[in-house]
Length: 363
Image (cartoon, rainbow, N blue to C red; front, side, top):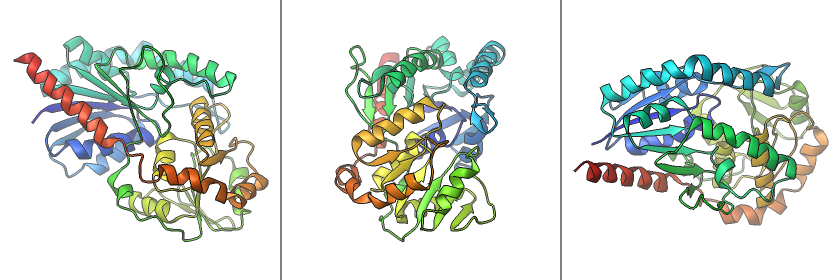
């Protein structure tokens, strides 16, 4: 049994879902210490509250900043710079102490900047498992020029977060060729949670929607006009708006609804797109205008032929009606990916191989 320290970004639910899926596969053989913040903290704590081999620890993290209901890129950058100047150094010192007390054999990070620095200073091998490294490693020639420029700018943040991991694993629902110099990176699909893998997809005639908390009301009004019942998660429980019902996050119910919906209209996060494709669900994704990563995900989804996208700020009833009226065109591309995307086994192989190398190097 090895001791593994894991850190993850606390923003949203995608990082937490990915890491929880990995932890469930590792906990039978290893002892785990997890470090995270914000949205992810509660999810991970609930998931492993009764697991004696998993310790969940709160750390300060970085979250996106919003102004007037829209992603504020400049405020988000300023917040990140302030975090780096004031918080990161003391946090690295703290995590160095945690790694030494825990006697960690391996560190794993999902886009969190402190644990990689602590592990490097102590000589603990680091496995990076995230989505964001696609900005560095993937050939993005299929994207519009403006997004390729944004990818180049954003890639500097990836370097800042995670420098020189021992192993780099990139989890994405899309897998274009690797760039020269990145042949060592391991490409895997999304880490699909076991609850999704256990589902038998069906169509019970409703739309599933997962939306971020700053979604404008106009988007809700457009969903209410689509002609089908719509179940919305992510905005908390509210009064119904026409055929739109609002549901508090419940992992079991959400997975069941994802498996039984007619189609998905949602934010454009990598994890949810991957899970929907695993179940063969066509998607209309709604990236925020200022959220470059979600825009890139949206273009890749459309290029695969498995869905469409519209800017969250611009979506209206016509866009939704056109999407729902043309679902047949997504059937063949969805058949090619349904049930074939889960990358969890491959990530576990990388982790176990690194642990074996760690033992042999120490011998």
